[in-house]
Amino acid sequence: MKIKINKEKCIGCGSCVSIAPETFDFDDDGKAEIINNEGEDALIKEAIEYCPTAAIEIDKK
Ligand code: SF4
Image 1 (tube, rainbow, N blue to C red):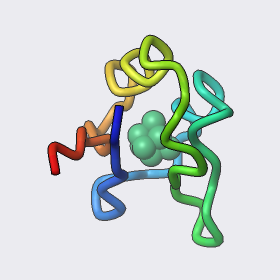
Image 2 (tube, helix red, strand yellow; image 1 turned 45 degrees about the vertical axis):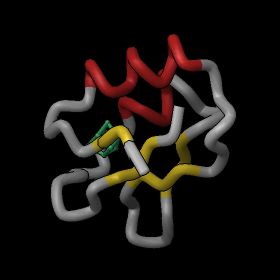
Image 3 (tube, rainbow, N blue to C red; image 1 turned 45 degrees about the horizontal axis):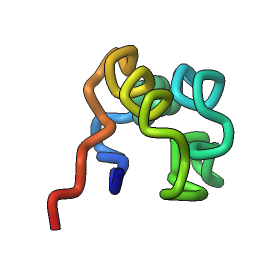
């Protein structure tokens, strides 16, 4: 599943990083970034669901 982080919305809460550490990590600004787009879809979906600001967006391109 191809996803991207909306950095304007991300508040750096770390929820996605703890749910799916193979997919998300923090960038230098303390916001989430995608480190690998091949992670498990189930975990990515869970991270999307639990992101408090809906900053994880599915990239349909
Ligand atoms: S769960 Fe959402 S707000 Fe929290 S770090 Fe991840 S993308 Fe940012």
